[in-house]
Image 1 (tube, rainbow, N blue to C red):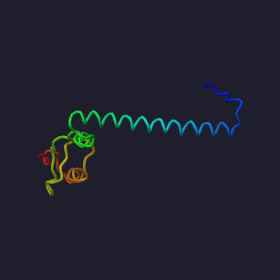
Image 2: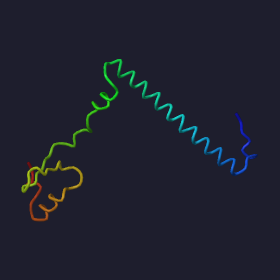
Image 3: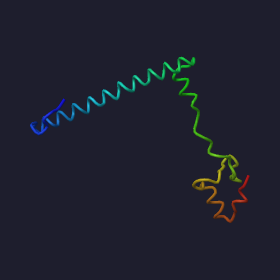
Image 4: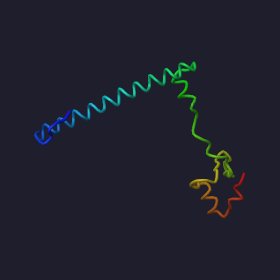
Length: 103
């Protein structure tokens, strides 16, 4: 299918663009629905629902074991990676060392 774009007016081109965008969204929606049905069928073959499979995905990987704890509140811990928590910064400013905070 070939369209002589140079023969169309600006308004006709805008309408064509709008129609194409709608058609592309419709195709994406239809393909997602087909993919979901295929995934549901695959899960069913193993005796699960798709929701059970998705929920079983678990959480992200562990952030690591805590290495430091706030002496004033031991429930506040830090792995030693990433940005220092405020309680670590305050303890260091107060003259403590990281070894003083180590678990």
